[in-house]
Length: 224
Image 1 (cartoon, rainbow, N blue to C red):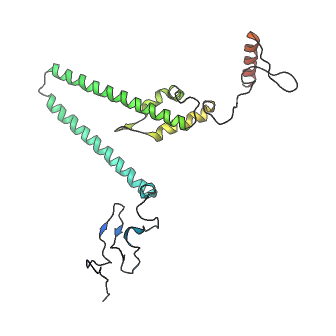
Image 2 (image 1 turned 30 degrees about the vertical axis):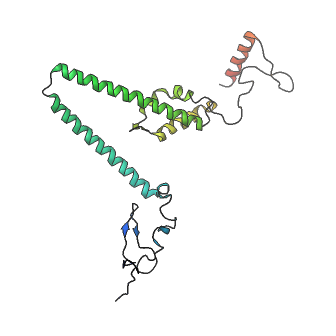
Image 3 (image 1 turned 135 degrees about the vertical axis):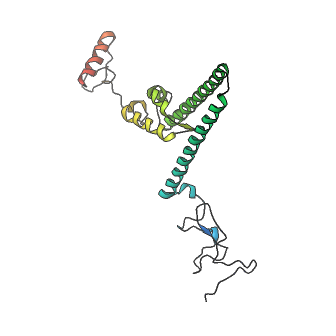
């Protein structure tokens, strides 16, 4: 028969977990762990040696991320079911209403939807400007004009903007129009500006009026 150890004050067996934490790990009384004595003293450390619960949310791993995504998907599915149930209940309430009452309800609903859309648009644009500034866009406000209608497809869930989708749009913009972003050095030459260069040292000479325009057109034609 295997001998077991008990806590001297409480009498709790060291090989029996007190509880299971939010990450699914068994927690034992301080001073013991599993029956083979391999416990590390409760919260002092985790199975992977990461040092307890601190930072676990940031170190979910693939399995944790998958579980988190499944939880989010389940919540969205539940919200959709609740919406369908609410729509069905509203249909029952509207069954005995007059046409004027129904029109009034529709107007209120449209007003709320319009207000929500306007608020979501402001949230998306604010988030985009913040991301554009972080990406060192020369003028973060240009991101809104450049991305235009694509911003309408960005989801806003309970005030939370889909930042990943926004970041992807911004990355594509940077790839296609790098000149909108500050890379720490100027890539524009006097030839790009259509000024032209003369002399052995290639120093630019600004041509006045139409001559400058012709020079710019010629420079553009050579690059095509």
